[in-house]
Every structure is written in structure tokens, then in C-alpha cells.
Image (cartoon, rainbow, N blue to C red; front, side, top):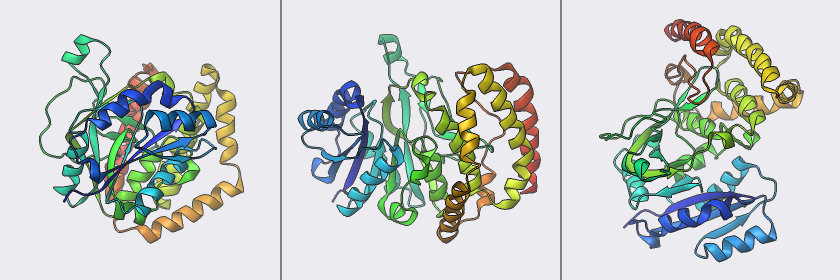
Length: 355
């Protein structure tokens, strides 16, 4: 008998009107048993119009409404309902995607064949815009890498698609675009930390899964095509910049925070200069203001306590998989390339040796 799988999609404002139809059609075409599949759409920042549109467009989906737009909380609402409905696996997937017919069955197969894995990520390809790209698709993500200062970036981005055998381990973190997680792990790690709101939530979930003692793997035959737009990803600079530091302060042991203090200070000063040049200095001040609030550190202390109770694996081996180079694939910055990256890479090699 097939395992019951929940598929969670999050809508935000007009997102469904722009992306739902092709995503829905590819979900309906899956070769995984329909009777073992539950589809939940979290209508984040819900309105009467969005609720009605979702009901009319995807009547077989269960609609869960929310109002505040918090993506992490929306994901948790889906997780909670999936667990209450006794689903054994839970899939989180972006709505701006189109899936191959065996996308879901291959995700399930990845966890069935790898009991040591807690999360499996699909091979995420860039959605083809023309016939040439259909014939020669390119990669969006083969898993994501995590820099020791909290920056995350995709592995394999814009490279030609290639065959991958087996189920390679993802040493960084699983992309939130398309992954499957075991229900018992979700119960253990309690889903997302809703303080993140959006961005780095997939890093946070992956690190908790690793602390619980599970691996993260790639399911290379689970193919999904992502309508990725870099410009969409940089609109929420506040959360991207804030949450990379929140990851460090929440997860890193005190000795590692001390070892990271100098490069973190250099990077923060550099980001401040970059924010002035880029016209988002007020956003950077808002990030600094967040970390000046005593309430922030009370939340961090509470979460660090929760992580201690979760821990089944030491953090040092997890940290040794962090990288020392920042790869912002669509930003060509010569200072980053020729000065910052070489110096930070050497520094991280020394720290890896120490830990």
C-alpha cells in the first residue's frame, strides 16, 4: 500500500492567478496513487477573492486561509493539517513550478530507499522559455550550499542538466522549492521557526533535521521545473539579510560564534557600505535595529534551548560542510570575487581545521 503524502502549496496575493494552472495540471498528471495524495493550499494574505479563485481553480485541494503573509507560519499551517490527517510524508513545493509525471513517486522512493535520510530534494531545473531550452534544460538547484556567515546559494545553477546516479547527500541544505520530509521528523523538529517569516526558512528546517540525526539527499529523478526570477528574490532584502545572522545566532555554538566574530564584523561593515551604494541603507538600519532589541535575544535563547532538547548529532560535523566562498551567481562583484572570497576561504579552512 502506498504511503499517504501531503503536498503543500502556499499562495500569496495574486500568486495563484499567475502560476497555479500549470502547476495544478502537472499535479493532476502525477503517477503516484491519487487516493494516497492530499493537496493543501495555504492561502496566505487571504481575501474573499483569492479563496473563491482557489476553490474554483483547484476544487480537489484543501484550502487553509491565513491573513498575515508569514510564509513560515503558512508552511506550519500546512504541516499541522497534514500531520492531523495522518500523512506519512509531507512535500513542500513552490507554486511557480511544473512537475514531471514521476516527480512525486521519485521523491517518495528516495526516502523509502534511504532510511537514514530525513529530507529529499528534487532535481530543480529552470523552466524552459523556448524550444532550445526545452531541448537543453539548465539546472536551478542540485541542493543548496551554506556559507559559514549564513549566506545560502544554489549548487549547479545555470549549468546544463546532466544525469546523476544514486541519491547524493546534500551537505548544505534542501531548497524550499521542492522537498519531501518524513512526518515523524516534522513532529520532532516542530516545523519552521516562524520568526524567520520568509527566506532562510529552508536552511533553518534543514539544520534542525541534521541536528536530529538525519541526512538530506538529492532525488535526481524527481524532476521539477521552476519559473525562477532573481528579481523576485531580492525584493525582500530585509529578511534575507536579517535571517542569515539569525541562523548563526540560533544554531552556532558559542565557540563558533566567537571564531566567526571577525569575518562577521567585516562582512556586516561591507554590507552596510554596499547598502549605501545600492540604495537600501534604511533596510540595513532596520536589520541592525532588530538585533538591538532585547526581545530578539530572548527569542534566540528560547530557540537555542529547544535545539538542545532536539539534538541527536553534534554541530561540528554539520559546520564542517559549510563553504568559505560566497557564490551569488547573478551578481558579478569584483571585490567579492578577488578579495573577500579568497580571504574568507582561507579563514574558513583554518576554522574547519580547528573544529
